[in-house]
Amino acid sequence: MHDVVIRGGLLVTPDGVLQADLTIEDGRIQAIAPELGASREVIDATGLHVFPGVVDAHVHFNEPGRTDWEGSGTGSRALAAGGGTAFVDMPLNSTPCTVNAQEFARKQTALAASSITDFALWGGLVPGNRDDLAALADAGAVGFKAFMADSGLPEFPRADDLTLFEGMTEAARLGLPVAVHAESQEITAALSARLLSGDGCGVRDVLASRPVIAEVEAIARATLLASETGARLHIVHVSSGRGVAVAAEARARGVDVTIETCPHYLCFTTEDVERIGVAAKCAPPIRDASERDALWRAVLDGTIDLIGSDHSPAPPERKRGGFARAWGGIAGVQATLAVLLECGHHARGLPLTRVASLLASRPAARFGLSRKGTVAVGMDADLALVALHETHVFDQFLHRHPMSPYLGMSCRGAVTLTIRRGETIFADGTITARTRGKLVTCTR
Ligand SMILES: NC(=O)NC(NC(N)=O)C(=O)[O-]
Ligand SMILES: [Zn+2]
Ligand SMILES: [Zn+2]
Image 1 (cartoon, rainbow, N blue to C red):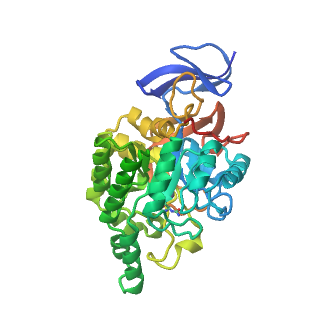
Image 2: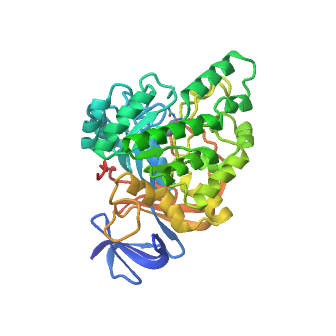
Image 3: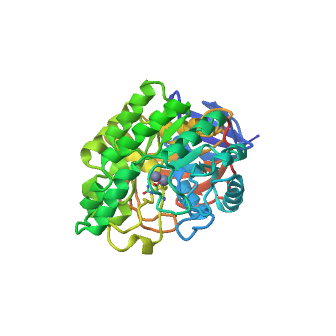
């Protein structure tokens, strides 16, 4: 007898949506067929879509060291409530940052104790840690994250061009990608200093201090360095159509580059930031409607590879002091799937198979999480059951601090059940996980 059978759901597979039963054995998908036999546990999925669990490749759960900002217990519960089953944690704002094997091990221990979803880890690339990258790779890091502009944290200094060049050379040797926060330091630092010393500190002034050209220039430079070194490159949180275009041009020239954007760049515009305030402050900033629309075109035509939440909250006191001085970072880990279903599928005709690839199979494949991200036999049974036409209002989040630009938003597409390696970890509004998540190492 199987452990679990999910009956009669609409399975969102790479080949399309098909109605079938799905059985789970030892945490893996064992069979997919029209009518499968008896099992210990039966989940009726009639009328529900069965997605691969969201694999969020970009979160800051800040554990260890900054759990007053978030934590993998609260963060992973929010992820699970939004249909997520795995995340890849950034090397900051945990502290000490994940820049060597010792800190990798420390974070692994902390997350294994508190996360209800599975997790993988980014290592950091900072000045002076090139010799630590090999040990981070051996520990199972999915790649190395670098900031091209100040990260806001002194313990995670930005990567200058030589650090990027030498780090990418080493990453290429190790066969792992380098992920960059791509904004020009020269432009953003000077404009930010001018902003804080001047009179104009309104939302529009702040947004103008991180202009699109700062992103475009940094992406162009990162792709040049990747082309020179042969490194695989991942551009996180691209906020503008022109940023996407520059990366896509490099790809057309043969650079191995993937492009990530976030739900907030697809969902909000400058006007929304003015209305919402500090909950919608992030870097790079949310842009005007023309950039948002260009991002949607790039999602729809497949130029954008994947979508991560860049969930990066801070405690309320950090969000005070006016828009210019408030800490940047958006809390959105619970909203990604619902936002993509509402704004992507329902509003713009994005096929459900593409939602699954943007949120699960592409991130899993790009970052070597070989048993994650796809509804197929042999894969981990990581699943999100969704009532596609049911309206869900974001009135409550499970992450540590309630502030989020998605508060009050309503989406068609409600997650009813989340299953991680065969265990139901979220059901009908309640966290039901009995066991903890595990580290997933990158298959190189
Ligand atoms: N230190 C951060 O958490 N930074 C993050 N903050 C944002 N995006 O505003 C990021 O990913 O750049
Ligand atoms: Zn960033
Ligand atoms: Zn981030």
